[in-house]
Length: 254
Image 1 (cartoon, rainbow, N blue to C red):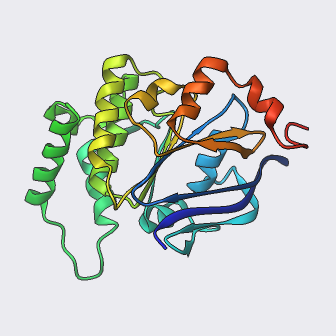
Image 2: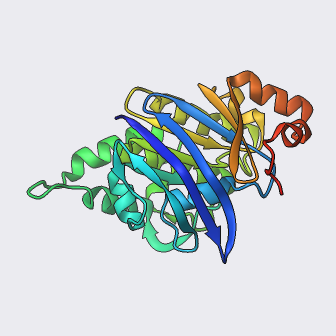
């Protein structure tokens, strides 16, 4: 089965339940967007999928192409094929972008495989050109002193090089001006295809003008309450989220 399948996922933080029987399937080859008001659990979903230690999964299952990832360490989840682009990427002083990506790729080598530096740099520079990143960027420490746009481009560069089966982009549009947004969106669109499933988490419809999703899901009180096509995002942009709360199943928001 070529999909990211989330089944009845329950997640708590410090004893407070945030996700409540959350279920969603993202097939490879599709882009799904999750939208919803603040505090509804969107970023909790992203961090729980990545195996963040502060987010306790109290029930449910998550499968990558049929492989259960609940309970695995973050590096195991990454090697299984899940990439996470965070809303606020961490700085890693003293580690250059080139060395960081190279280390990540080396960790994925099968026994007996060797790393070929010329091929690595050739591909790295190709991806950087695609994302309109100056090649001097590779010698900078990861995210240290970066603007918001540079951090997000760095995340997408990592994604392009690691070639995951699934990517979760947690508010990738946060803090971006329109030019940076277009560049990042173009990078994601260049990677769209049958070998990649994408889950976009966003507040705003503007990102979806550039990365047009196959499906849009509306999240409220820790669960999906509405699903549809791109027109659903346009409705949210025009009408806000009040109608979602009114249409939510009994018990949501209680």
